[in-house]
Length: 193
Length: 193
DNA sequence: TGTACATCAGTGAACGCGCGTTCACTGATGTAC
DNA sequence: TGTACATCAGTGAACGCGCGTTCACTGATGTAC
Image (tube, rainbow over all chains, first blue to last red; front, top):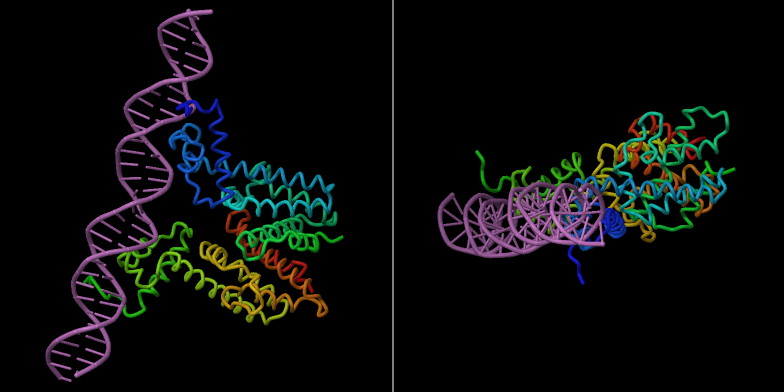
């Protein structure tokens, strides 16, 4: 069989590269990801990838972008499923940590490639997904008369707590444990009635 | 000049390797650290290092260990300087984040190489430095009648918050800013009177 | 409907690179007499 | 104090590896006539 060329229809190779890239990130680290390995696994020459991505960095950027979108989607879904408000906030945090645990390398890649969120006002959809989502959720939790500064600090604190829990579990410093995740987030002062 | 051999007295090469390793970690990432670069920089053949470390992994382990000890020392110093108690707790957190920011790659290395702290009771000095320190500090903050489980969750939450803040700043997701660090930690519910 | 042709997604050979590690070696050091 | 010798921290050449990227190429696809 083994047809030599045009094994992929138009646009399919790009998708296959992305899929395989994401798959490999499930099993190893970002630095262990190589163009050649991706190509090998989808049975295509290494150079074929250059038809779709100018270089390796571009592929990583695309993977990070796709990952960020997925994380955003999962957070949103969890939030909506919980019915918004405080339990929406808690659900968002849980989704964040669980995504990190189930997509370790991808999660790290996302964090290390999206820019700082200090980039001024008009939110940068994909880049600032987490920030924006948190900001909205935290607003739902604070007293209505909270100052902007107070709100911001609260956002950072909530994000840091959830992010830290994710990273510590990823690094094996804290044993991953769904119950513990729930306890840390649910009982957090910000989440208490 | 350039004497060819025995440029280092007994034990000095080991120290020089460690120092240069730590220095390189200040400027780049763990994966960018190579035996050969360390050797080059201290003007020694790459193979000389094998007299002191069985392989690269052993060097990384030693660097992680040294880093962990330094972090522990800085936390302890900050704690003592603040006079213990609640402000000691806050100071410890600040020291943790600042250490991370000033020793980015080393901090990551520490976190990724020390084992889980779930390893049973009799604490493993270097490995569990952060945990033990936090545990003591959190105990000083909780009401005396707090349950062990509650205490543990509180420890994890505090650690996660501080660790997350450090990682988010390291990854450029939150702009590093001493004032913000202080606000996030100082005003955290755990640190409030 | 059939044929000529431009396009461009694929190919495989080749490049130079820096890496970790091995090997047989050398020569300064410090000790035993 | 002077000499013979074992030790062992250093050397440089060499290994094989997998990588990202370049290059000139080929041949299937889809369009214009």
